[in-house]
Image (cartoon, rainbow, N blue to C red):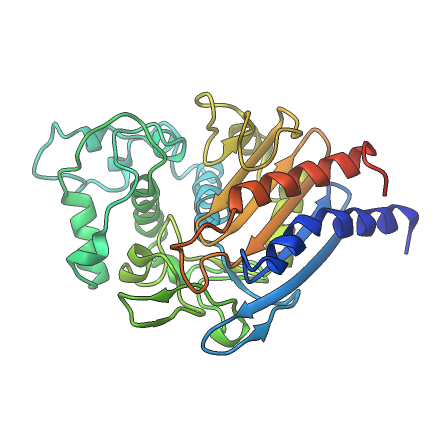
Length: 346
């Protein structure tokens, strides 16, 4: 083991301490922290339980997590930008270029003017979320409902609806449901439930959710949507992050798009570093990140050539508690960077 790798192992050991404390306090069942650098070095630490009820099971490095809204950046944003690279769409094309039936009964509807860029950057009038699953569980009917719904208008907010529309666009362009799209190793829309961390004891489905998407709307849409549905191991997430750092996942123009601000806090698909954000205040201005409701998060600091992912199952067995996830994420990010920069002694 090289000296550099040994140092990275020490960094992840120390940076995992806030998560270890949260597990000891029973704020979260378990966690996995991984760090990767632009030159391909990585280190991973884990502890705690993949499942508490109906019986306890320990988690490991190979545990699969419901990545929740990390789906938006790892899958959907990357898929859209890849389609742009292939010349099949442009970022400033309207969605109706591939979804001509969007709000087809009102040619003047605001939704018909929405572009791929606006949806990726959450610069639309669409609401944050809607309990679509309460309208039924037929995926095709729900997709039609999303396309024809007269959405209430409001100021731009972080919106699942934006990415549901992007997911439908990907399906239209590629001719296949999202759940059937090929994915890199250690990422999947259809994981083995026995290898997964449990999420919520869902009152709607009447069972502990394990290996099926936690998000109710994504479940009703068939298990995968543009906003949620992706599962992955820590190494699957780090493979993706490492590919962003070394330029192997996206072309230079696409990388520029995910690094360039479209608004004060948003880039194409991602959140940019800002005061008080989940990645911690030590991040460089060239850091992007994203979180997932289930307790996941990924941050990529291009200036340092460093990325880290913290995967937890903080909604197990219930979302209705204070898991302290914001403070945990920030403390972890602060530790990772302070140790990486040498400002904290190993």
